[in-house]
Image 1 (tube, rainbow, N blue to C red):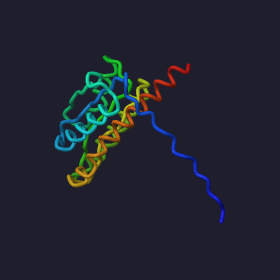
Image 2: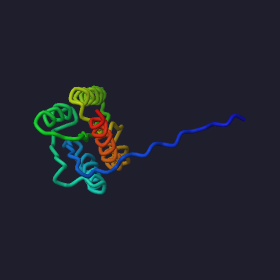
Image 3: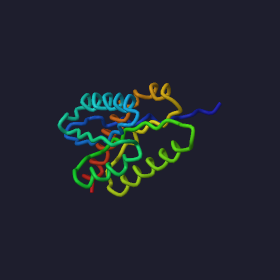
Length: 158
């Protein structure tokens, strides 16, 4: 039998002290997005991000997330953003169009601005699946702090 060696998973930098984060949250499917937002804010506070350093704006639905993310980064400095939404499958392909457009739009804004953006859009089949994924809000917060710290570290190494 051949020995297999695995690298240890690198530790995340989860000290949110002195970070400024933006959250863009879709009101559509609020029972889900509001719960994700609450968990996200709770975790950000736990990670040391000051409440006054977390700027939350709301949009009608997930489709509007990239546009407002771009506007936030044009008018305010943030170390990272988290875009929170929930797209559920319907009787037509509308969900597929929205999911793809939002993901590409958020990625484009992030690449164009150089600011990390967490894609916190739940793409689900139904309300039950959405409910099972609400806890991802904590992971979105952790990922935002992690990439914000990494990005800041890389900027200071220049």
